[in-house]
Image (cartoon, rainbow, N blue to C red; front, side, top):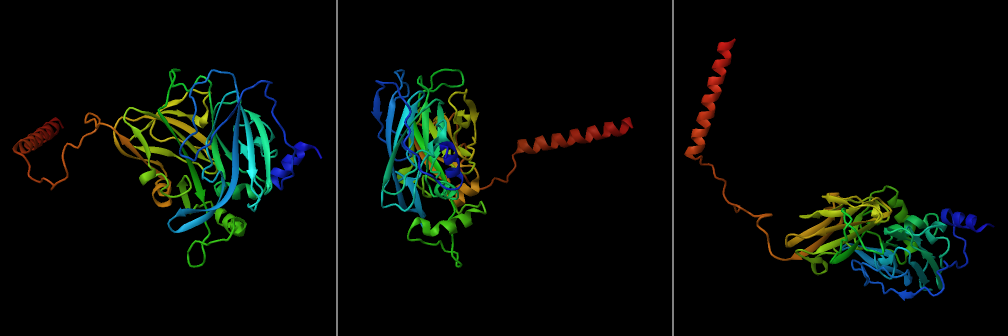
Length: 387
């Protein structure tokens, strides 16, 4: 059977194994290993790198693990490297990504990766599927700069099941010369955070309590049935309600420029920073296009990632959330950000503290009211005389 036909059949109904396919980086191309870290943090990287393209090697290990959705609900998370979302990967335009995907024999399902940043072969999904106890290596060239989603897509109903179980992440492909603002000038960020938004559809029993399962496949049918209504039980940042609050709140200082990378592999989202804005928004996550400016709320279409930048001007507690406030407040789609620095009263000041309502009217106010009434009477008299 033709390999392309095999891949299409595998994506839609079931997966047929494929042999390892390698992109041909030129002989002598430098090879580096990227140490991935758990979100919201990013691996170490240079924002500008005018050197020749490299082969960037990363290793993702699939792990099926129990995680908390909130204090009252747990779920079998399907993960890469143990986190929801999976780690952010960073390349530069023209680099090759060399992925080693490992599926330990302790897992119960086959896994793979669809890279939205890749070109061809279903984003690599048909070329890197591994059963428990296997590993595979796939290499592809990054030709489009921007931020992109990657997710597991083993075929058929396994595609939504794996995605809504947390098996998704993001990749950032930087232009070799770094990011540019709306005027074409270099824009350097002082900090960067990756927020992966996850919708969960956790089944409940007849008493309204969340069900528990001994392994992922046991709850698959119930979860997919619950998901058909398209109403999530949780919408969380980084796997768990409150994951980016308290001691885990994001941090910055007044004057710093912060790059926010926000992904949603399945549903639309509307990030908003309460008390701040997006100075720059790269629509659709594309670094090839001029960023938009001055957004209060920006949009993340389902199945994509977005980049937005803001320079903080005031200290204090900020809330970064999805501005569907039902999802943010009731379902968990919110994070906190603590910003240090000196307060600027020119931007905001409480000019009167809360206190009793003042009902006494000043003499000046009374005189102004009488004068206005006399003018109204005189105007009415003139109008009547003219008639």
